[in-house]
Image (cartoon, rainbow, N blue to C red; front, side, top):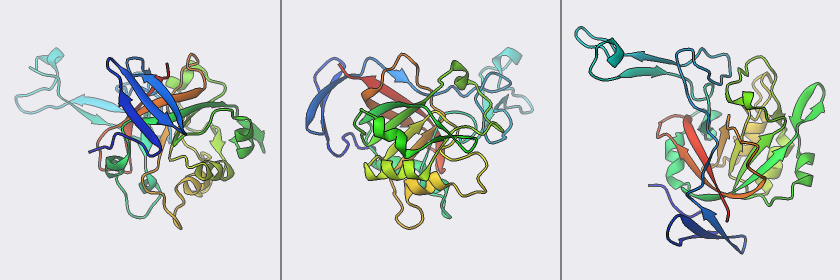
Length: 266
């Protein structure tokens, strides 16, 4: 069972869909009837779908038997399809430290101790040009005016709508420096959400420095901390504090498809 109250925050429901919470000693209210969905739809069979890491398109294929077809359009009684996809490569997903450890820790087990609602800071950053790469380095955090909560969602610029269906493989996307991650850890950020296919450089020789810095693997592993990748934040959502509902599919794997939802303050 997932917990409902993050450490350092007090939640109270005031009727209708207004939720009151205290964070950093200040009272806030969030409207749960207003939702900003940050997830990208998983689509198969040639439909527009974001992709990364050189994987084939997702597939959704009717199950077929001797006297059964799982497609109403083909005469079946129900639609009943097998779905083949990779959570890391086919859309919005949330991963735990099991992504980079010898033993595959389960993101499902991780979420049994993560609050269902938590304060989240939305921040917009423009990567710097460093050595021919576009890098999100710690210096960018010096100009962030939004207090960093236990959850931080980062919208990178430019923020074109093509991010929703972009093929990221072989494009050397922007990435985060280990120093940036160290700053987040020092600020007690436990849940990071980004609109990129990875927090690390696409081709880095397997070092995964940003992942290791965030999860402190192997020396001081941060169990219960997550990274969500391939979100999309609409331009209409201003930077600031929100209430986050991070919905993750119950999969016994290092990562699972997810639906992060931001609720604005009132």
